[in-house]
Image 1: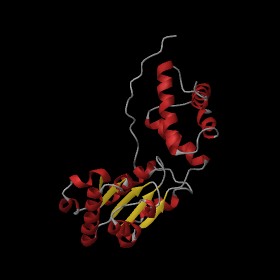
Image 2: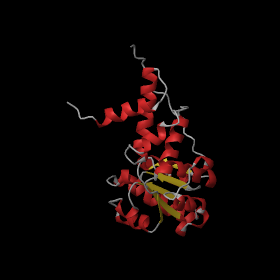
Image 3: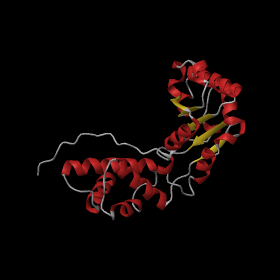
Image 4: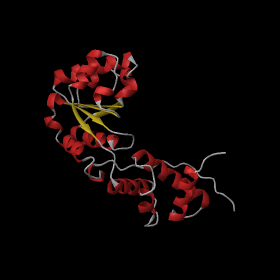
Length: 227
């Protein structure tokens, strides 16, 4: 059978407030994002594993507050005085734990926003006190921020996230595919994203719909030892 060559088409992620699926694992974090006007010291650290919804909540907050979203690794390329005239979200703070230039930029941006009475949202994977920033003054300011953690998903949320990931790619799997996957896959949002992408590619290559049989084949292949 001929195999079709697939082209990786970008998925259009839905990042609006109404697109965020609420569950016990993320309800507290969502409530803190919604209540951003009352953050203690006008700053919050939002944490959770890859694909847990940090970026989605960051975009929800940015839309509501008028914030600008920037990556921590790009901080030292900005004019900080110009940045500090609006709320700011800085993503992936842990990525600069060994970069003194970007840490210094974040330290100054933090102080400028505090002086202007503007909020700062910071994101990372681990709890803020585990970010390991090498600039002590910056770490102490991070530690003083409020903290909202996104916990690992339960079955209902994991299934809902997979449904959203399929929808983002304009895919409609058979009804029994998601329940089948949820009970057998690694329990993480990152794994859900990888499986949806892989099923999309496999379905395109085979020119077949996404069925339980195709999902079973994918999982079997991913767990089969090499050699």
